[in-house]
Length: 452
Ligand code: GLY
Ligand code: MN
Ligand code: MN
Image (tube, rainbow, N blue to C red; front, side, top):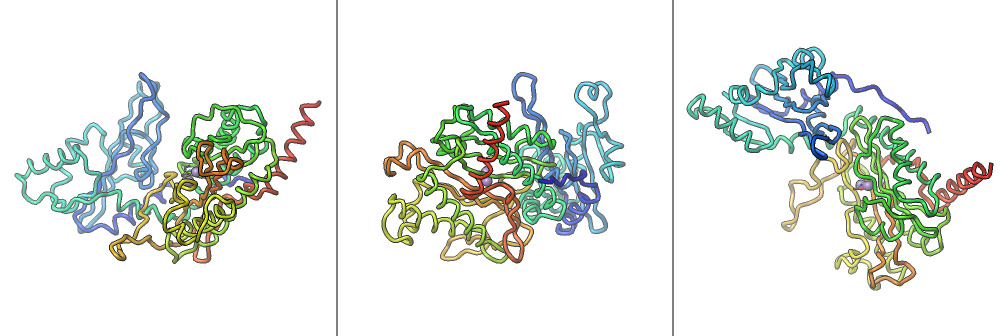
């Protein structure tokens, strides 16, 4: 598989997003948006830094301790960045900094100030502002109080808006460079799943399979876009199982839910396959129900339909399948209305995907029907996951014994277009035949190599 590696996005693309945001704001607005804090792992060791997704979306700037301010008056829009100053000693210890001059030269800021000046400068910038777009917290309150002090409460901000709800709606419709990056994240994620299918062996630890994923991610400068789930046997019935510390048994399935983060964009794939390379008849029976739900759910998506249509589609197929397996009985519509499927399928069928694995954007429109919020309509450029599953836990006595300990999820990532959903993760084998064929080939290869 050829991976489409991409240059870092030029500043002009981030400038376009800032211009688009500014265009939609009323005059006399001020946007304040800070990046994510550092997180301590233990004592003085930090987690590797990752910027706030919305901040990065508008700035392309990945250093910690930074705040973006966009100022829109009747005549102009100014981009102001607060960031760390250059500091020779700190840069020797912690790494390079863009610095104040660099913010103007390299990041396209109109003005830049040291992050330490934020508390002093923001109250001044708030003077004359009618609409403040921010994440409202105690710091913003103190800036507002500071601004009111400066002018004895006259003419300071009469409307406060949540900046996230504005940026999240922008992020929901992906622009071209974002779609390219998500596609690459999906390609790398696919390669990692293929590597796991090729290398899995009975009696390995789940974490050894996780290491295969991480190896592929690392080859492309990626990290996991969330904690990888490598769940063999009954562990797959724990939806967010991340211990990954059990031995994988011959005869069990293993469910992997893992994705690469490429240039901060997430892939999110689940595949379930036999540890020994061959599905049993019972496993195949359950697998093919989930597979059908996955395929039909994907086929139900396109611009103009509502965003829960794939869930409705999947629920119908899964419920019908539960009847065929003898786990439920009765009429499909009544079983769906009564949520009879819930002990075996307890999550939604997908979510938006982008800079965050559970990406930004509302799922409901403003319209209500019979007092209930309605799902919004899909638009071209949205990216989402489709991830039906069936979970038959060992301790679920509602289930015939032969099915217990099987947990299956099949998850793909799709781009919504006018004509349908384009599957971005189609390189990973998905049918029983495709999976068994790939695994048979690789088992043969590895056995030959071991025999030498
Ligand atoms: N990996 C988390 C999810 O599939 O939603
Ligand atoms: Mn997932
Ligand atoms: Mn997902």
